[in-house]
Amino acid sequence: MKKILVAVDGSQSAQNAAQKAAELAEDLNAEVTLIHVYTESAEIPVNQFNEVASYLSAETLENIMDQQEDTIKEKRQRILDDDAEFFEEKGISPDKVLLHGDPADTVCDYAEENDFELIIVADKGHGKVERFLLGSISDKIVRHAKTSVMVVK
Image (cartoon, rainbow, N blue to C red; front, side, top):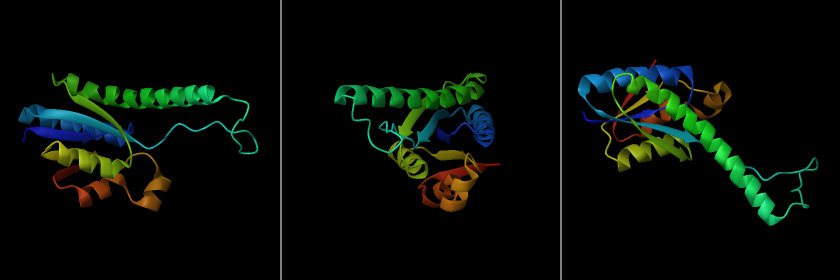
Protein backbone atom coordinates (compact mmCIF):
# COMPACT_ATOMS: atom_id res chain seq x y z
CA MET A 1 0.00 0.00 0.00
CA LYS A 2 1.68 3.13 -1.24
CA LYS A 3 -1.01 5.84 -1.55
CA ILE A 4 -3.27 6.85 1.31
CA LEU A 5 -5.96 9.54 1.16
CA VAL A 6 -6.97 11.01 4.52
CA ALA A 7 -10.21 13.01 4.77
CA VAL A 8 -10.13 15.73 7.42
CA ASP A 9 -12.68 18.28 8.59
CA GLY A 10 -11.17 19.94 11.65
CA SER A 11 -13.07 17.82 14.18
CA GLN A 12 -11.41 15.94 17.02
CA SER A 13 -12.46 12.65 15.40
CA ALA A 14 -10.74 13.65 12.15
CA GLN A 15 -7.60 14.55 14.08
CA ASN A 16 -7.66 11.08 15.64
CA ALA A 17 -7.98 9.61 12.14
CA ALA A 18 -5.05 11.74 10.96
CA GLN A 19 -2.92 10.50 13.85
CA LYS A 20 -3.76 6.88 13.02
CA ALA A 21 -3.06 7.53 9.33
CA ALA A 22 0.33 9.04 10.20
CA GLU A 23 1.27 5.91 12.15
CA LEU A 24 0.14 3.65 9.32
CA ALA A 25 1.89 5.72 6.65
CA GLU A 26 5.11 5.63 8.65
CA ASP A 27 4.90 1.84 9.02
CA LEU A 28 4.14 1.34 5.32
CA ASN A 29 6.37 4.11 3.99
CA ALA A 30 3.30 5.33 2.08
CA GLU A 31 2.56 8.61 0.32
CA VAL A 32 -0.18 10.59 2.03
CA THR A 33 -2.62 13.15 0.74
CA LEU A 34 -4.88 15.08 3.08
CA ILE A 35 -8.17 16.14 1.56
CA HIS A 36 -10.67 18.62 2.92
CA VAL A 37 -13.92 19.23 1.08
CA TYR A 38 -15.99 22.24 2.03
CA THR A 39 -19.57 22.99 1.09
CA GLU A 40 -20.09 26.66 1.89
CA SER A 41 -19.91 29.33 -0.79
CA ALA A 42 -19.69 33.09 -0.80
CA GLU A 43 -23.08 34.75 -0.52
CA ILE A 44 -24.38 37.86 -2.20
CA PRO A 45 -24.95 40.56 0.44
CA VAL A 46 -28.63 41.20 1.09
CA ASN A 47 -30.49 43.80 3.13
CA GLN A 48 -33.08 43.23 5.87
CA PHE A 49 -35.76 42.59 3.24
CA ASN A 50 -33.67 39.84 1.65
CA GLU A 51 -32.97 41.98 -1.39
CA VAL A 52 -29.56 42.39 -2.98
CA ALA A 53 -28.02 45.63 -1.87
CA SER A 54 -28.87 47.50 -5.07
CA TYR A 55 -26.68 50.48 -4.24
CA LEU A 56 -23.56 48.35 -4.75
CA SER A 57 -21.96 48.25 -8.16
CA ALA A 58 -21.39 44.94 -9.94
CA GLU A 59 -17.65 45.40 -9.40
CA THR A 60 -18.13 45.95 -5.66
CA LEU A 61 -20.38 42.89 -5.39
CA GLU A 62 -17.78 40.82 -7.21
CA ASN A 63 -15.05 42.07 -4.86
CA ILE A 64 -17.17 41.22 -1.80
CA MET A 65 -17.83 37.74 -3.15
CA ASP A 66 -14.13 37.21 -3.92
CA GLN A 67 -13.16 38.32 -0.40
CA GLN A 68 -15.71 35.95 1.13
CA GLU A 69 -14.43 33.07 -0.99
CA ASP A 70 -10.83 33.84 0.00
CA THR A 71 -11.82 33.89 3.69
CA ILE A 72 -13.56 30.53 3.36
CA LYS A 73 -10.54 28.99 1.61
CA GLU A 74 -8.07 30.39 4.16
CA LYS A 75 -10.11 28.98 7.05
CA ARG A 76 -10.35 25.58 5.35
CA GLN A 77 -6.65 25.57 4.42
CA ARG A 78 -5.81 25.97 8.12
CA ILE A 79 -7.60 22.67 8.78
CA LEU A 80 -5.31 20.92 6.30
CA ASP A 81 -2.23 22.66 7.69
CA ASP A 82 -3.10 21.73 11.29
CA ASP A 83 -3.66 18.06 10.46
CA ALA A 84 -0.46 17.94 8.40
CA GLU A 85 1.48 18.41 11.66
CA PHE A 86 0.82 14.78 12.70
CA PHE A 87 2.58 13.63 9.56
CA GLU A 88 5.40 16.14 9.64
CA GLU A 89 6.27 15.00 13.19
CA LYS A 90 6.94 11.56 11.67
CA GLY A 91 8.97 12.94 8.78
CA ILE A 92 6.15 12.60 6.24
CA SER A 93 5.29 15.56 4.00
CA PRO A 94 1.67 15.05 2.96
CA ASP A 95 0.13 16.62 -0.10
CA LYS A 96 -2.84 18.82 0.77
CA VAL A 97 -5.95 19.10 -1.39
CA LEU A 98 -8.75 21.60 -0.80
CA LEU A 99 -11.90 21.09 -2.86
CA HIS A 100 -15.46 22.41 -2.94
CA GLY A 101 -18.45 20.10 -3.30
CA ASP A 102 -20.28 17.24 -1.66
CA PRO A 103 -17.74 15.78 0.79
CA ALA A 104 -18.47 12.07 0.31
CA ASP A 105 -18.80 12.19 -3.47
CA THR A 106 -15.74 14.41 -3.87
CA VAL A 107 -13.54 12.20 -1.66
CA CYS A 108 -14.64 9.05 -3.52
CA ASP A 109 -14.12 10.63 -6.93
CA TYR A 110 -10.72 12.05 -6.00
CA ALA A 111 -9.56 8.69 -4.62
CA GLU A 112 -10.62 6.87 -7.77
CA GLU A 113 -9.20 9.45 -10.20
CA ASN A 114 -5.83 9.46 -8.43
CA ASP A 115 -5.44 5.71 -7.79
CA PHE A 116 -5.40 5.74 -3.99
CA GLU A 117 -5.25 2.34 -2.36
CA LEU A 118 -6.82 3.39 0.95
CA ILE A 119 -9.10 6.14 2.20
CA ILE A 120 -8.97 6.93 5.91
CA VAL A 121 -11.89 8.78 7.49
CA ALA A 122 -13.19 9.49 10.98
CA ASP A 123 -16.35 7.76 12.13
CA LYS A 124 -17.93 11.14 12.80
CA GLY A 125 -17.14 14.76 12.17
CA HIS A 126 -18.93 18.04 12.58
CA GLY A 127 -22.68 18.37 12.50
CA LYS A 128 -24.98 16.06 14.47
CA VAL A 129 -28.09 17.45 12.79
CA GLU A 130 -26.57 17.09 9.32
CA ARG A 131 -25.51 13.53 10.16
CA PHE A 132 -29.07 12.72 11.31
CA LEU A 133 -30.66 14.17 8.18
CA LEU A 134 -28.16 13.06 5.55
CA GLY A 135 -26.30 10.12 7.06
CA SER A 136 -22.68 10.47 7.95
CA ILE A 137 -20.08 11.32 5.37
CA SER A 138 -17.99 8.34 6.45
CA ASP A 139 -20.98 6.02 5.90
CA LYS A 140 -21.42 7.38 2.38
CA ILE A 141 -17.72 7.01 1.63
CA VAL A 142 -17.75 3.40 2.83
CA ARG A 143 -20.75 2.60 0.65
CA HIS A 144 -19.61 4.38 -2.52
CA ALA A 145 -15.81 4.23 -2.61
CA LYS A 146 -14.23 1.90 -5.14
CA THR A 147 -11.19 1.46 -2.92
CA SER A 148 -10.67 0.21 0.62
CA VAL A 149 -11.78 2.49 3.44
CA MET A 150 -10.57 2.57 7.04
CA VAL A 151 -12.93 4.20 9.51
CA VAL A 152 -11.18 5.40 12.67
CA LYS A 153 -13.14 5.73 15.89
